[in-house]
Length: 116
Image (cartoon, rainbow, N blue to C red; front, side, top):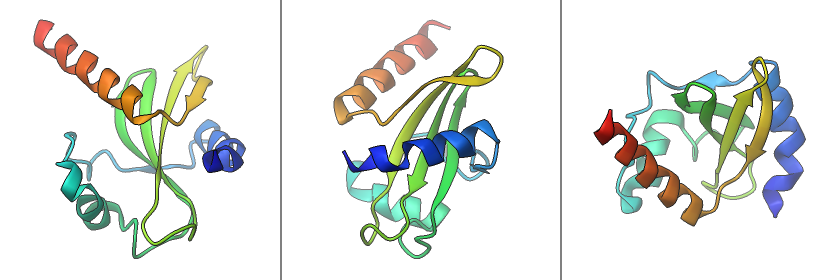
């Protein structure tokens, strides 16, 4: 997978808190698939600014979701990274989830919100 070449850099950025805090810009909801690229361009300039960067888009305490712009690999590509910060704030898990992982996670999260 091509995201593997970025994993150490992303890990270093996250561990040193040098990521961009995009929580205030993030709509905190998933846009329709047909509009995702347009929304992310509006909010984080994923197409017009291809400089490598990592943006926090969701903070669920120990579990955080980031998007990473990979620096000109394609016109508008980006990666979604999920990081589990346990053990005193250190990353215990860092992964690029599959689409199936994202749907399963989102469904479980929505169900948990309904119960709380």
